[in-house]
Image (cartoon, rainbow, N blue to C red; front, side, top):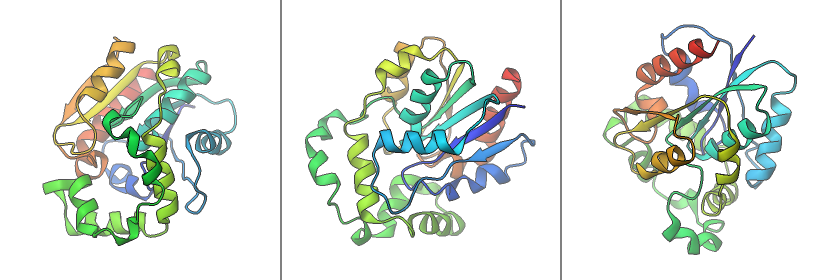
Length: 229
């Protein structure tokens, strides 16, 4: 049986998948991977964490949200027989903001805890923020230390999964948010250059697309999943 495996965004808790999991789009087997909240691990360590979380040989479809896109790409390239499909949501294969690469040393010491909650809400949800989504975002960020968030942001500023991307043979779907304040539209176009068969779908919503537009996203993912199955 094929399972949809959800890889989380920068917080890594998996809590932000709740709206997607609650969306009435139909039932399929789903597994949510969660990253450590106290270990300041980079992409390589977190990829091993994902591998440990999905042991076995059963087929899977990977969904990489935001931060986890490069991990999903790498695993799809590494396990071409097992990964039957790849969904990328508001994400990238390499640093989406090359001009910020020089600031990588500062990322690990940024005082994330001192930043106003309204700032992260604006960046992730924009005008789509609701009291419920604000609470969900706060709950997802609460257990994650500034050190961990900084290490992950530093990873984003140096990641380049282009070599792995070129080796992916599974069908791919990219969900691109029309109001994304964090990831430029060019991120999807860069991936499509390497994978011309990539299906890019523009979905109205902010960077937190799976949270702000869960019904639309769930329908697209479910349709993609069922075609593969």
